[in-house]
Length: 175
Image (cartoon, rainbow, N blue to C red):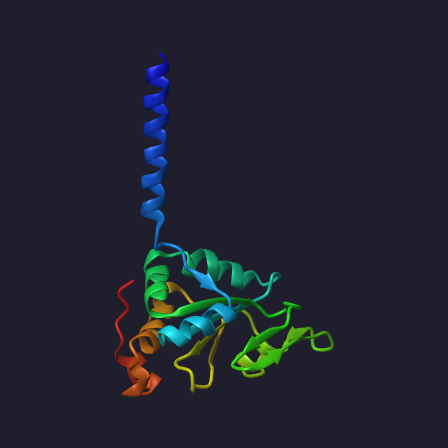
């Protein structure tokens, strides 16, 4: 009997381990601004920032319907440094050598304002193609198919050879 329990425990443990391996890469590996800056010193990749708020319904939909999709997560994890940022966060954040703070009068973090280029609206996806580039803000919810055109445009560095409108016109989503 004791041997059966040990074998059953071993099978359950192995099953749980293999299930966790199957899940690997299917969730976005969100990192902090500080971690992104460290990683950018090692390897330059575009940065994507999901600017959200806790009260935003469409932000929750974007999390559950877009960021949760395995193709989206896999692509983000391999082509970007992904940051999830609450626009109403009160912690001081240093990014590109500048300290940003929450502005209680405006009800928004100054880094969120800088990233979304002054337009409040959530969710807001911000792409920073390289260290020298200005942020590119894309406000609103996007399905995985709508999102894919932006991900590939920045992830494959198509901005070096084409403007977005031309690229998007010919783009065929595969997700």
